[in-house]
Every structure is written in C-alpha cells, then in structure tokens.
Image (cartoon, rainbow, N blue to C red; front, side, top):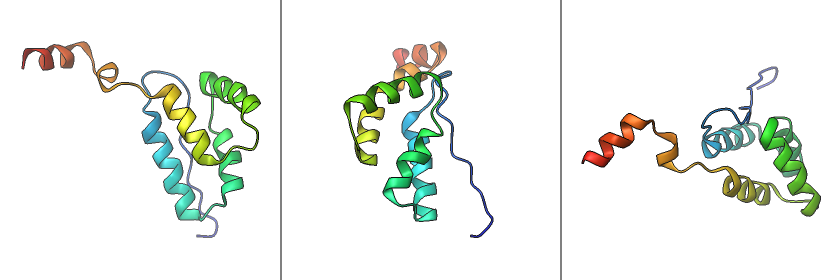
Length: 98
C-alpha cells in the first residue's frame, strides 16, 4: 500500500512487556511489506529503547552480521518474562487456591 505507515511496537523495557508479542507484531509488519532480511535488522534497531538497546549493542559486538532469526533467538531468550511474572498478586493467589 503506497503511502500507508504502520508503526512498529517499541521495546521500551518498562513494565512487563511481552517481547514475543512485540516481536510477532514486527514480523507481521515485515510480512505485509515483504521487507528484505537486511532491512528487518535495521528497522528492528529503531524500535529498541533503554535496556533492550543496551542489550542489543553488547550482543551485536559479539555477533557480527547476524540474521534476524539469530537476533530473535537471543532477544527472546534474554527478555522473555515467565507467565507467572506477568500476573498480579491476586491472580497468583487465585491460581494457588485451585
């Protein structure tokens, strides 16, 4: 679609962001736009903020010319939040009672 612009999710590092969900949104945008792999890495870097950006800079120093799948694997491994960490105290109490 010429002239349309879909915003990428920002990986801010605030709260309990679901990095897998944000990554899924990026992949959906890339698929819709038929984005080449070499551009995906650049576009992803523009979405990273705070701790995610710091992690990526350190990670990229040791991983020269990574594929997008390599970035995803390292990124999700580093920042994936366990389901129980995303739930509030009441929900955890409720689960415990069952």
